[in-house]
Image (cartoon, rainbow, N blue to C red; front, side):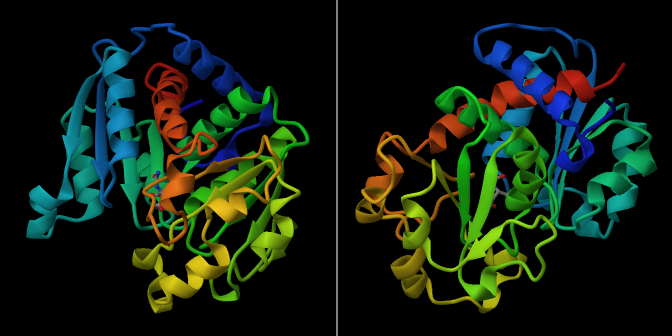
Length: 295
Ligand code: NCD
């Protein structure tokens, strides 16, 4: 495995191997697999969890970590994405971790650089390590994924997280369905999953309600009615009580309290949001170890 661009490129066996290794790291295993290697993160969109967990994962594997920040770099002087990738490569990076608004940016970076590239979120297309970290969280909570029912709720149209889940989870036996307002649903359904507009109708049937943020910066800009959205799709204490007793709430973050999730739900012990964040580190260790240099 050289780099990781999309969960679509992974077989179920590869996903399970990565999840097993991530669980070992979560249980305290250590590795210096990237000792002496340079892991460069280049995030052309904002990030808190993903960038820091990649950098922490790389540091735990013994790598030198370089952070490229477009907002304080020569990107502001007109340097192109391609020239930036070539510059980071010339400096001796061994792995690039890329986040970019364009769907194919990570693939292009791999072609231009000849390096393993790990995708940290591209456009609406892919966010493979988020999907893997979430699969790890599900596996820990439910003791296996086969037969689990997950409904992804909200701005599916603009969500790379949803697309990565739709590529990864069904291959692991998880039944995924989608719920959201018509204007935030995908135009096509190549995954052939159930799509609907009524959250309360499905709440009692699922093991996981996976909430999404309305991603205005990615095209949901015409969608201004946050109060109307919350009334129909916001996860509230009342809606939580409509779920099965052991069902959980997940969210990739950043959460918008009062829009897709209220304070009670965000802070209750059935919300796995911070567990998801924590699992980002061992999961990214497993990915960097498997996809990094020398593989
Ligand atoms: C997501 C992203 O950037 O795709 N966040 C994340 O990486 N945890 C989801 C989002 O921005 O809403």
